[in-house]
Amino acid sequence: MKKIKLQKVEHQAKIGKDCPYIEPNVKDDCLLELDGEIIGFYIKDVSKYSEKLKALITIANKEFRSKNVHKTPMDRSNVLAIQQANPGMTRSEARALGTSQMSAILGSIPPKPQFKRNYPTISSVHKNEKSQTFIKAMWAACLECEKIIKEITPHLYERQVELFKDIKKEWKFGTLYTGSISNFNISAPFHRDTGNIVGTVNTILTKRNNANGGCLNVPDYNVTFEQADNSMLVYPAWKNVHGVTPIKPISKDGYRNSLIFYPLKAFKGI
Image 1 (cartoon, rainbow, N blue to C red):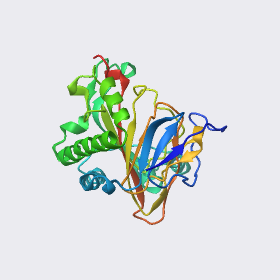
Image 2: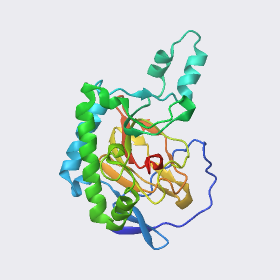
Image 3: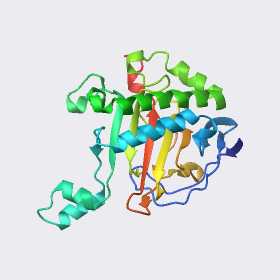
Image 4: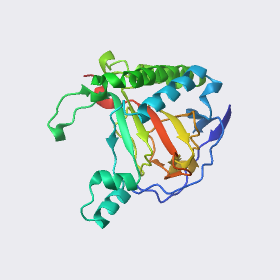
């Protein structure tokens, strides 16, 4: 696998600003090297490493898009603008005309004192019997991703295992993560995953159909990952500001979904 040496560049991206549409410049399998260390990698088609993983994310994606999995709507600015421009229109009606974006979280949810919940819990999706196929597919996909990480970057795998020693089994999703979020058509503004454990990596799996965009942009290094259908990106999301480019369906059935595994520091030592 080839290496891409990441180098810092000047940029204007700021946390909270929308990520613009940028054509991807990382489209092939590669290791990501920073200051002589491999910090992550990109695989364009996971079937090269695991046909099982490809099958699992196909199942998970199908279930996620179905009515079996409860999803939280994420209203983008165009949905609000449509509703404001049409007095009397309901939010549901505006969502049907605007950009449909939804997400579903699995695994552990950290304490949220701002909502008067000072204790961790497990996502309510786990309580829904109809969601069990989705949950099982995502859990199994997580374990397959961990095998690939161990094969390609054993030092990243061992580091994450070490950082997870003080996290109880009940709060783990797979072995190296605390939770998962699946996003339907969500293009994220620039942000940094400050809630993640420093030194860890996220895993992002992508499913797409008849849609462009929805690519991860890391302005610090001027890299934008293609995130092709059935691709896998392993990256330290705590390390840099990053955003997701706008998603542009090219047909009525176009979409881009991301299936993400992440490690939250809120569960260390509790």
